[in-house]
Length: 97
Image (cartoon, rainbow, N blue to C red; front, side):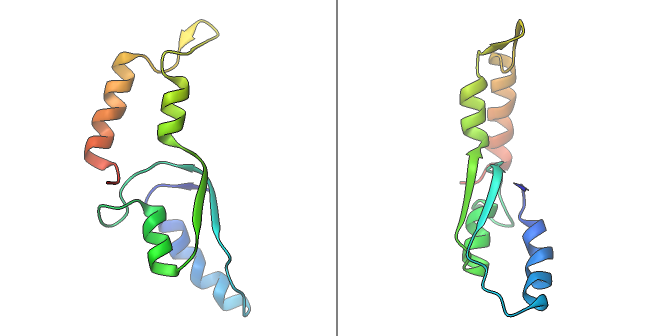
């Protein structure tokens, strides 16, 4: 999964719990977009606080940005200075604190 707001776990947690007496041990997402959940903290932090489920991501958007910044692939720079500024501006507004 990719975590943006945490909405998918809000929808699936009760479904999983209703199927059997199961204990959810944790949540691993492929990409943490590092956006605010309902408050100022990240959706993964909110999931942990709300459900008591340990959470982690394979990679964060910040790591993707750092890896691709000024990196050329097939002759094209994936994240140039203008794109990096746009990403940074976006996270200044929507990024978790």
